[in-house]
Length: 127
Image 1 (cartoon, rainbow, N blue to C red):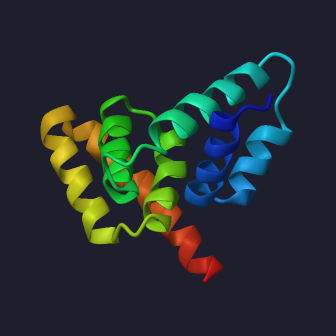
Image 2 (cartoon, rainbow, N blue to C red):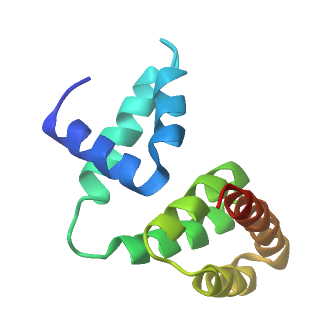
């Protein structure tokens, strides 16, 4: 797929999530799930993440809160790293999960804390 929104989305997706994550997602796509990768890249990243209405840091914290509410630990993993790439501090991420725990349920918050800790541990080892 190639469109302006897709190319813009791919650029932002790489900047936020990192080349390694994006390459794995795109290169492992099959005929079955390739349309979903294209949809996510074009519409999530190319249409929404490229908008100027919110800074990326804010978008990252919103994503973490929403993904906590939806109990999507795989996506929380990707977006914790993305939030750090977008300038979010660990304290800001912690505060987001604490707030989400109150409004979305403590078990959801606990899962996001557990997921983020694993990401931070991995990032610390990489550093």
